[in-house]
Image (cartoon, rainbow, N blue to C red; front, side, top):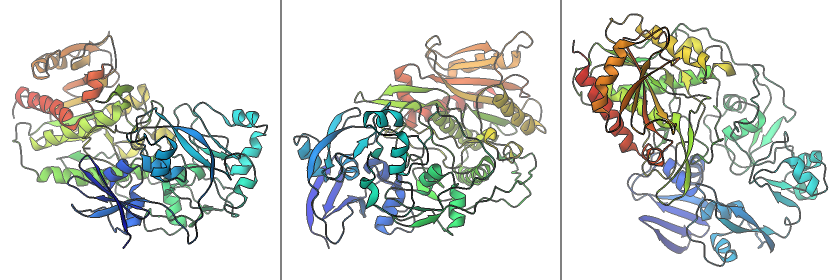
Length: 586
């Protein structure tokens, strides 16, 4: 057993350091994902370090949450200078120290021993080893490859060659070698040396292609911190193809493992009937055998199959791309939603007041359209970012559960393949913009094209109306209710909940307008109703069709409130109570 060096008490968290390992003692409520967020590591790393076969951990269990790589003989690396590092959301002293080959004590010492609690935007000193100080450039925000090349008297192509970059894209925090000597001793095999960035910036042009491309790099040598997803983003080979080419049974990979990148095939096109997933009603699934792996892998904190790469939404432009195409993602989403709703139906009934009613719940935005991404602050005054569609989808699931337990049938217009209701307490980390939601209709996904992902605009909204048409086709008149959920972001709008109905030159939906007026007393102080010409309500076959702006997240107190699980549940309880009390009983 390694010698116990230090015991740290951070709030109520016990943190032990044994030799080079950092140990966390599990307390109630801990999950692998919450530990990964806390220590800025991945779930796969925790499972590998602790030889865990699944994601189950127990109170009192000691789990390795930090590991410093050591060789049989390791000489101290002399430090001759330092650079500055700007702290980001989710950073920890341990994570920063590990990134720059330092110990936590060395990092504190370099900063005058004053480092204890990090704050986003804080600049701290980080050491550059003597062998790299003159040869490494850490990319700063706003820099381009051309800028760095010009300032160092280099050609951009030279830097790409030295770092074996697949293209000229670079990101803040990247460490770029500026001489060929710097990488000569690292690895002689062809590989990509750039730090993996499994994200897409909204301003980048999307590369949309249905054909597989042959890569110049035949194999990839796994680097520390890599995941199948990050390798997929950097090489253009899908996660599914990486698993198939390398006969991987799961997503666990090890540093220095060699992965094949060639031999890919275009995804098989499967023709499917018009199918949505409806509960509690009969579930109709595609007749063809699904091509996705139906095993649902729980990753903790209500995440399944795979988890977000970022710990928290870092800025307004950040988004994470899907792992598979729309068709495979749709199948995973259907499987996950089916399992979740079965668990919902096992819970005690809340009554049958809504029996006979069929609701289509439309989580606003989703897929490529995040809705509003607003800057907010937490209780310490630190900046964070709230993504509308992520929180609205959570509210939609909570409303679905309440309606089902009151006897209703429910269909969602949008499904996620990797999460159900999410507990976001404490709310210091915000939900990350993932673009993997799909339309809940097989025919809208089976072509498996980039343009099949949900997006804004009239075409995208008309697809939601199409799902309502398919759903309501055999539902009794008077029992069809459509609710589109949103969070407003408009300084000109009131702060209270807004209930919107269709009103344009050609149509005034009086039935929905009357019902909206009745809802107002249930939805709290400042609630209001108004008519708008909204595409998602236009030509909608529902007897009652409404768009509800639950909160106006332009206002800081509303963007603050929507982050908390219990407050989102409170919003849902108000709507559910109103529907139970106001809709005529069968």
